[in-house]
Length: 273
Image 1 (cartoon, rainbow, N blue to C red):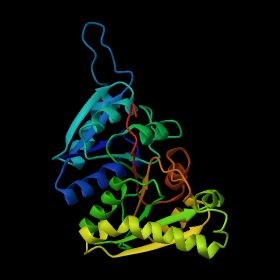
Image 2 (cartoon, rainbow, N blue to C red):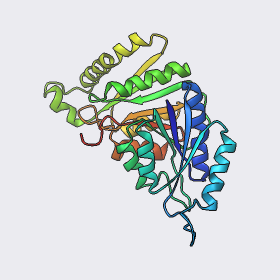
Image 3 (spheres, helix red, strand yellow):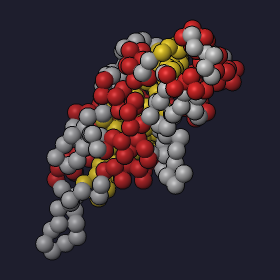
């Protein structure tokens, strides 16, 4: 059981390591630090060796977390994290980590990570918790059990309230039929569906306080608004359908870019599916 964290020496990646340590302690897991170097130094008369910069980052990582397993790997950082994440319980990266080595998360790397990590992916800008005692999770009618299961587990471990957020847009009329025209009627039907999704987990985690928000509008805007009073936001990676889309390529990225709290993206689609 491990928490994998990508480190590139940027302030955001150190924030990710700090958050990863906290999460690993909460879950009783080991921290595994991945430092990727795409173009290692090649001595004229010897094998390839890690550069002084990479070695310095590894040294700093060991100082910050003496119990962590620190690995220097050659190649693309995204692929390195995807590979490491296959056997991990959680992958963590800084939400804006840019450096001379390579950004672990930026406009091109983040979508690739969010679409392909087998483990949940945490994107961290600031590890300091606002201390609101609330976790926000975005759901739609296609949200898998792993998303709500992870959210309830996290809330139980932290002793937090869980805020379940869902939005609906005009396409919901095709699901509920032309008769369901009134906004209040549609909202009530979506609320009923959300409560049905949540009920089995509430029974399993009776200690978790749950509140719900269902409204008309864009999911990213709703999550960003709710994040202002949260310690963590959780979204699924492949939501699509009538309750509005919590999609990797749009909603998750918007939320990551606009909120200061950590965001966990849980992919329910695996490579080859």
